Length: 561
Image (cartoon, rainbow, N blue to C red; front, side):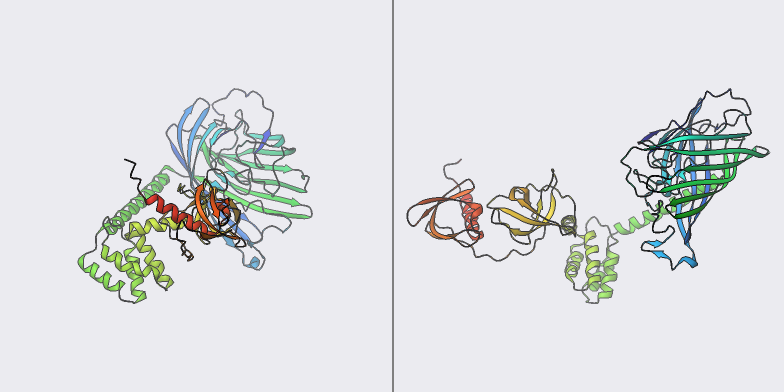
């Protein structure tokens, strides 16, 4: 998704837009601070962030890298690659104060707004960024969100620059905070993706609240091309209707490098305060980043290249070993081991065979492995299964089929339709169509007298549904099935036989005259003809009709060419 950003103001809640008034900028002089990296240049930053809570300290560390794709007038197009890894250090004094899901940093009355796991900034990711020379985010493709109101890590270095060559400047925003489908520096809100409300509330309503954000810069000193600024930040939002308020403040030193017209680093400390009714939680946060020299970047890239080459060589070696056929001695040793009855030795041999990837697996090895798949020894059985997946293509195909029908989800349409004469039995694995065009694996639980079938959806759940036969299809022929219950076969005959309804309460002696659609026409002993729906008949009668149908289908018509 491409994010259109028209404001330098920050998002502080999911999908928030902060509106400020702007004025026409004064003329730019040679001394004015501007982001002006050279086209095709590369730069990188080393990040260290620590978040201190009552029971633990969370660390975020990593390298963020940028390539300048183009610089056109006032716009700079960058490609960002990188991400920060997360680690935690637990405090000994707090080990006894653990909640049900780990150390408790927030009181039970304040749900942590930072426990969301899916933050893109904690993984290796790529962003496409378009900036103005003053640091305004014009366009952002994808996000690199971090928790704790830290925003997109890809955008953190780029502070707003003054309009002129001022040494001190301040951005005060009396802002309207509105939940909308919009992103800027904080992507989908500072707390995470997907419209996540930081305090667990619904964000369906489009609400607007007042908040105040202040950012100020004061030049401290200049050492050659490095200009050091004191940065102060403050954000306050009044208490919401449900009694939650928060504020964030911070101070530190931000450094700009005039030699490359890019940020050089920061050393900053925040305090995030979350208030809910009578509870208050303060979260100290420290952030440091520094721009790496070209030599450091070259060394990092060289090390990454070396490791990639080592991995490629190891993969090539493993591939060659996996594809090498067994020697005569290896084959003899494997066969002896597989038939030895020594479980430990068999498991070791199977583990080695499972590493193979042969174009023409030896059938003798396959034959020796196959019985072990049925072993009572769980470890041996699993080892044999893993090896058979690599050595026997047909076994792998059937195993894949079984796996698809053992879990919840959608399976391929078999087009094996079920009608009133189709044999079904309790425990049979089928596929059912509950909604839309999708077929799901299920097990038959009960065959009802009204023609419907009760099934349980497979996959570990216990959900049962009742469907018509037209909503059922047979599973693939190769799928292993539970044993079908023994049923005495009905002998097809034109003589009178006893017919029964599905409940077994009603019976009649009659001769089958014909099958008409979904019904049978019977002639009773008193000579009266009756039409009975097939669905109302007993399973024995249905088996009789199926067998009769199969016999008639096997007879070739002598009058057909």
